[in-house]
Length: 370
View (cartoon, rainbow, N blue to C red):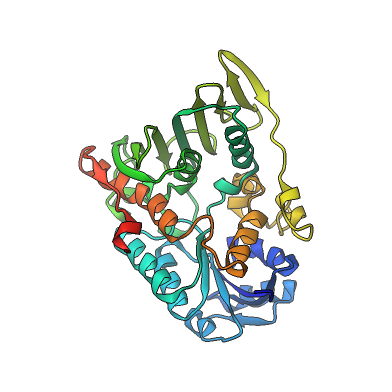
């Protein structure tokens, strides 16, 4: 396949970060955007010169000029929007998490198989410059054999859209789960999780989740390595961080404890601060600049971009990988089975916490799908 992929973006809060990336990418043509509110839809579409605009998602899916949809709609809509797009014959990229229940994950895996279309969960951390650097350290032997992994995502979500209020911490855990499983080269097999602390009753009543913090231990499929995941969303005092730590037998990488303090590489008992390079050189030159800047000015940057320091320069890498998976007719690096596993870690972890730390097996989606 040599033609460009005709892209549409649904959801233009965070989603607008990707508009100029697809417009600049040599393998893409951005043909449409979709948002329920007409005024901001037209404002953004006019600003970027997008030719087609939709306030109705299903109407957009009926447009034969669209090959693929990048979904950035609210979390509760991810599964429904993904399945309907696949059934409409569109390739799908979707922001995290894949879904909110195990049955929704199964439905997406089935829809991918039935449609023959490509799916990619657009998990930012595994294309951040920090992750790409640590992956290089693993592949070149600097870290040696991995002995243990730890992921954490601490973020105060007060003031975010209403559906976030009271969300179980582990239901938005892929930023902490994905790097540890990717570096281990394995999927999660089971999880034990404890809930700790309490959030206010008005928050807890939204989803029936009382915990301020959820902390989980994972066993990995066909791997001797274990992993730990910690997550909070409300009423726990700490600076924002998405982080991972890798313990190897030769060296260990530790994420900085406060922003700007520097990531650390431990060689034996000797720590040294690590300079993290950018990886724009791995991208087409047309989109390489987007590893270091967003699309908004300082007064209008999306909160996720500000808090996440641009998500580690991941956005153009994600778009590039999704497009290449379509054009090369291969699974994406975060395909439906991988995405379902990463997402299910959080779903099963919360279920474990709600049952006093009982071990919960994570579905084997590849086996279930046959």
